[in-house]
Image (cartoon, rainbow, N blue to C red; front, side, top):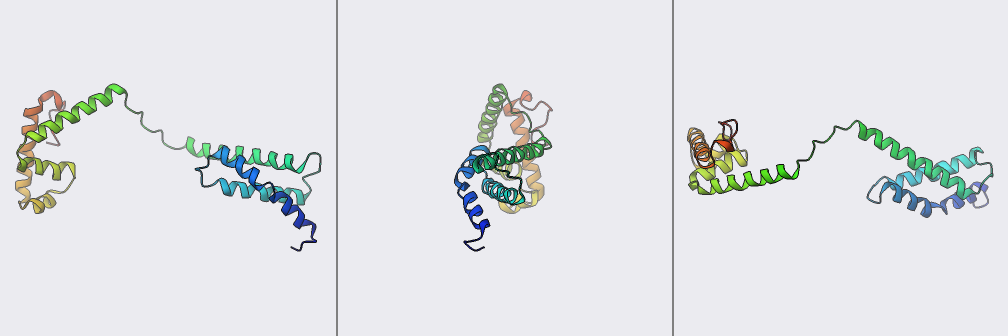
Length: 177
């Protein structure tokens, strides 16, 4: 496009609104939103296209025309994004303060009980149950057979049931017995 082309002046005039339009878009969508710049570019490209197609009739200033496009594009963007969110699964409700306190107390009691176990049982529980290693992986790490891992894990759970009491394990099970 040459400097004497009338379209060149139009592009420059509309580009002069980039900073203000970008500011409005960032404010509406959030500066953290990586799409703000794309939306800004779409708005300016749409403004140029509408002026060239004759949709801008000069009944208002070019600035008012561009800001109307900006408001509408921001509303469309937010509407589209909220449509996507409506179809997203509802997150589970967060536990209340009583449930959190109960969880913390149970964790504290379990930690204290595990610390009372001999190291050979603590190691089995840690690797097999807390780290989720298989019997074979646990056996290799500890130099045992898989059967010994199962036996020690079972006995460690039995010791935990004794230390913590039946009310700690409402189903009567400890750690998958």
